[in-house]
Amino acid sequence: MPGVENRDYEALLLDLDGTLLDLDIEKFIPAYIEALSGKFTDFLSRENFTRHLFAATKTMVENNDGGKRNETVFYEEFCGRIGKSREQIRPVIDSFYRNDFPRLSCWGKVHPDAAAVIENARRKNLRLVLATNPIFPATAILQRLSWSGFSSHIFDLITTMENMHFCKPNRAYYLEIAGALGIQPEKCLMAGNDTLEDLSASEAGMDTFLVEDLILHRTDKAPVSTYQGKMKDLAHFINNLNP
Ligand SMILES: [Mg+2]
Image (cartoon, rainbow, N blue to C red; front, side):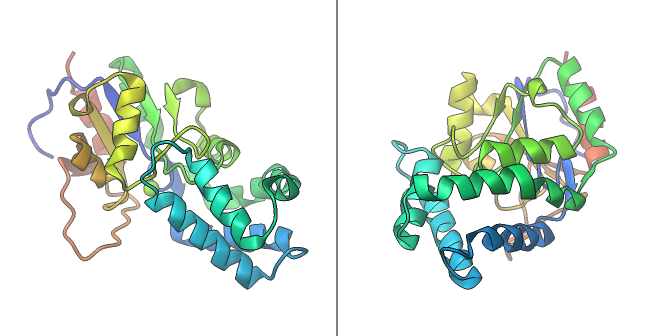
């Protein structure tokens, strides 16, 4: 652990999957798509559903037009591809998140060291952001948050596809969070397990803490973070912050 532990952070941004929540995203996503594609078989084959879902998600992630929320970008692309209106597919989506998504909770477990991170951050009066990639609707994020054992009320901001205009790893996502909080990016610490999506916060001027417990390293480049350690190290780090 680095020795510099006295930066005057005002906000802690926490990733969800593989960070606060013990969840292997690379196993969860196929199970999620399998379940979701099964709801659309009246409209299109599972293969075509998956292809259009990935393409629309890619469009949303790469979108750099701050004038549209992620939700708008996604559904414009997805609905255009499958030739259905948003109103036509809304009942299917709503039913999936109400009746089927809860069953995917078998993939998520409480992380034993996450509570100490949250408790210490609250004691240090840090603003808390659930900085999960806003490619999912709020219900999918709030349900996963509940699997992690935390209430949504402890967060000052939870980023979802409905309230954000950018996605990770775009630096604009992190700037949008800082702007929403009214805090300089330099006063924010982003903690997460993904060397690409979470460490890109540094491009917005934020410090980063790479959480190693369930590290996700998807590139060939060696990860560069301000700090690095396990969740219990992050709890200790926050505990040692001033004041
Ligand atoms: Mg993650």
